[in-house]
Image (cartoon, rainbow, N blue to C red; front, side):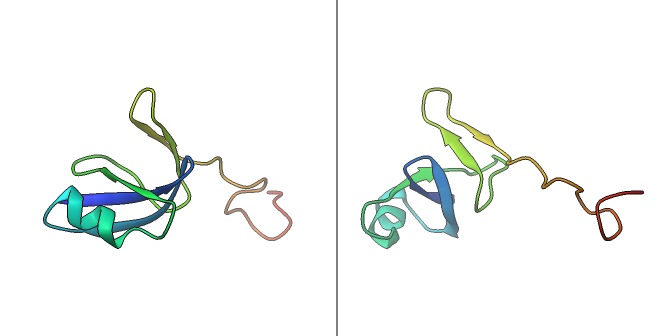
Length: 71
């Protein structure tokens, strides 16, 4: 199964573990584990505990365009 470690509402790590208990034991201090099997989630994404949704952060201004973000 795939689990995300959550610090507040930010995904800090995505790991593979047999159970949520194992994932929770591997979580850094003060963080908890959430089952993300079959869900798109990645480090740096925000977690909404009310809906269980993972929200991708917006692309930086200029995105992946040529240097300077224009064109």
